[in-house]
Image (cartoon, rainbow, N blue to C red; front, side):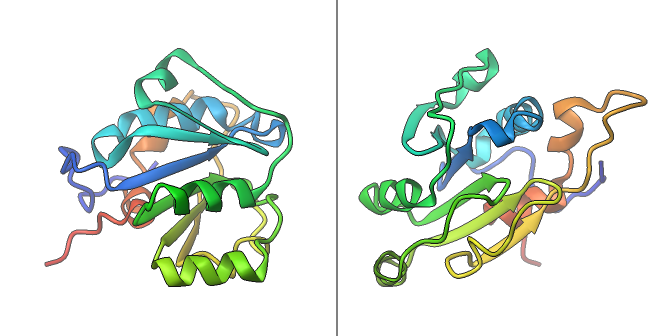
Length: 173
């Protein structure tokens, strides 16, 4: 989608960013592209991806290539935040359409005390209000044309400006 050199495509391989991918039914139209994009960015991510709906289920990042999708159908951010806190993650990327419910005040306080950095990547036309209080940064993917030349997952992954921002790999001069 956009050509950029902000993200070092070789990656650092430290796996610091934990990805929580919304696999609820409302994400159906985006799953294939998002799986492809995350696979392309694997050197920048934790070796497991955490699929969530109303529960979190972790799978090896390599399983995304096979299209593994474990979902309960609905969506809740509470299970994501508890899972990230339990794992003592430093940096989290939540990829969602945003319809996840707001975290309660006690959970927000635990996030602040733990110093957990939450970045959110919304699908086009995603819903911001549910995650505004807990997100350190929130970005939205551009609309992906559904007709004409097929762009596919590789094109989504080449939106390296967005990818660098959301996974926290901005290069400093």
